[in-house]
Length: 156
Picture 1: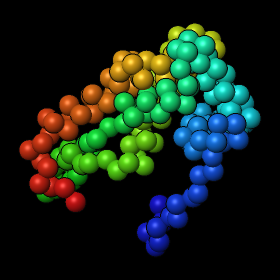
Picture 2: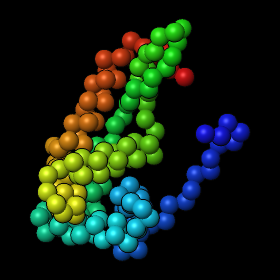
Picture 3: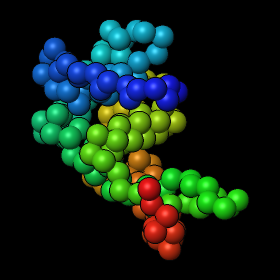
């Protein structure tokens, strides 16, 4: 990482069909080997599956899922005087959204089955209903921060 200057934040353009930046962020997380068209197909199929299963707006379901899985605090390792402490830190909004999307994708990939669109749809539905592995990961992160609250004064 460069010590000289801070990386500029890139503009995120909304996706062509739903006109949502969140879907474009999700596309980038699924992306493999630069195959953006395939990643978009997977997402649009999963959004169709969500619409058929829940009879609700899939974009709202996705936003609710991301809101439910976004962590408020996380722990960061901080080295002080030869020992490493897990210091709880507040999570900024953009990083929280990134973590939520990353967890949703990670646990969708780990689900059993062959079709990624179905697995992603099920993970999003579970996250919007406050169940599933992504929610468990958020709870675990919060528990870690709670357990290490004593080291909060080492915050930087």
